Length: 265
Image (cartoon, rainbow, N blue to C red; front, side):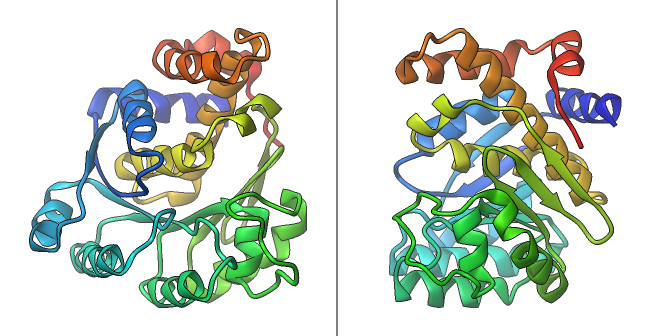
């Protein structure tokens, strides 16, 4: 599997897919730079009048509800309708699910369009499946990733989506398989938008491998984890430096480094 994932990393670099992101104000710059470093091409657009055209030219769509408002909800609605109409893959990041009624109502509607992939932290995944009995702490998870496995399975059955639970161990739930990835570093939690970056990278990988969204998700999260681990090892506990080192690691990652470091179970 490691070699197969590396092939997917190379495919993204070679094909440079165009990823349409309707994402939040906090992370636009960082996710765009991460997509570029990984070899993809980002576009951040949310105007209603260009949604159909933009989705039409993109290879995949990423929906991130981090800084939600009523205008952007309609942008998301228009975009996912067009993506489904054209048979294009799209990824949902349910940032802050469970935090407010507005977010939950919005997510309930968006889920009815059956995302190709859902990526969130454990608390967000549990909230989507109505299994989170505690209030969410903003965008931070109050649960470990393994606590959300049953919720992820429920979402998989209900919506047909591949579900990725991010955490110290990333868990990817498909129709027949569950993969766990154990790379990354705790320093990554001190940099805003790392989860959003993971979602954007998933968008890049499913763009070049739309027929196997499970493998695309595993590949993106493996790249994310290894690059984050390399960056943290070079950052000496400094989260500001980690941001720079992370982009460099995405761009410069070699096959030898990746195959030696990635941890899959």
